[in-house]
Length: 349
Image (tube, rainbow, N blue to C red):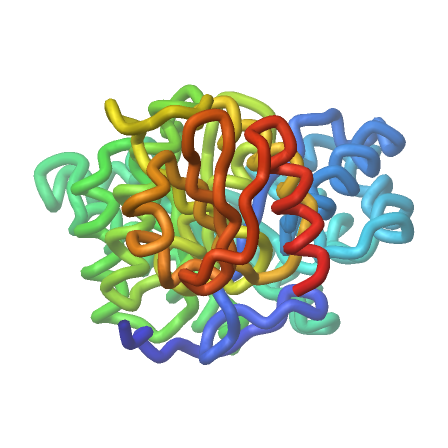
């Protein structure tokens, strides 16, 4: 798939847009001023492959905490600001790598100018985000309610406010909980601007259902070449957001990191505890960062052939299984030893 060309910006040391790799973001659910808890969560997110983190800045203590947080983490930090221009300036002064703020929500032109000037001094980008629930009233009236046009033009108004102050370090998000609406809004926006786009399905729901909605919406846009960074919004542990985001990118060939497991759905030919084996493999292979395709198949007849594109894999038999590399059988192993032997072979690749 060919990605649409967008302007490249830097969030800290991480490039977004242009031909840069698509990044996975998440947001902390700690109280930001609780520095120890916030750092601990960010480090856990780093371990599972989060590229950029965002935290809510609700008061001056949160803003001041950014400095200490940044000393202890390895990924860029985005400050999420609602309405208060003084908090935006304080966040920038304390080292935020990007602001998530809508200029039109922070008051007078003088206040907006102060925020933009602060960002200009340090070249801190601004993420302008319009959700389906935060569309400006005049656009709801003009375009007859919540739809792609009212979302896009409401966001463009915010963009113009920043551009009119001679600043264009911008990325844009247009999120809805409705998947078709989100897709249409991003499509329309991608035709109007070349700013990098932050993809997401907002308020996607609990982990299982939210994963499906996010995969359909974000995956569709990415397959169209639209999108430069993604955040999965789940009601659950932020670690799950990062895992889901990475798997979406892997499924489209947009991220070549870590193990990809291929496994069959089981059938009457399956003579081993395939579901248990796959769950064990998923757990034990999670922290191996080699870009490998690992197949775990239930059938010794079709397994190696069906998964011949895998780098390595297992095909189960009656209480035993075959281990194969690139479709060629290398050894026969008892069922209870299959995963350990598989890991040994992976470590030797």
